[in-house]
Image (cartoon, rainbow, N blue to C red; front, side, top):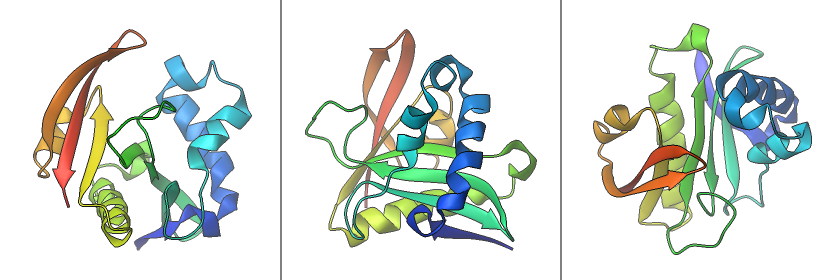
Length: 152
């Protein structure tokens, strides 16, 4: 059975998740020093962003998602951002992405946020079906992003 846990309680999953990020997004992650990719999984104090979550089956990490203050590292008025949603290929199609998204949204709501934000180059239709709406389109590092928002 798959469960979602705070990544702050399971640092042993960071290494495998870094490897999964590099495999999934080589155009970005393979060019970055490993410690920089590891920072994608950094967690702040409980009840505050940043936070990261892992989907786990037994002792195996099968996916992740994070809440970050900004889309990139530059300050902006929209916050928090749901980022880094990834389900490893063998576990896709089982609703794990939904479990992870629910965990991130629930955490944002518990922190007092009334809106969450996300950006994607590839899963816009999936996100739209889950109650999100596009509020902006952005070109960033040669990629076309849909920026989305969801009332919590």
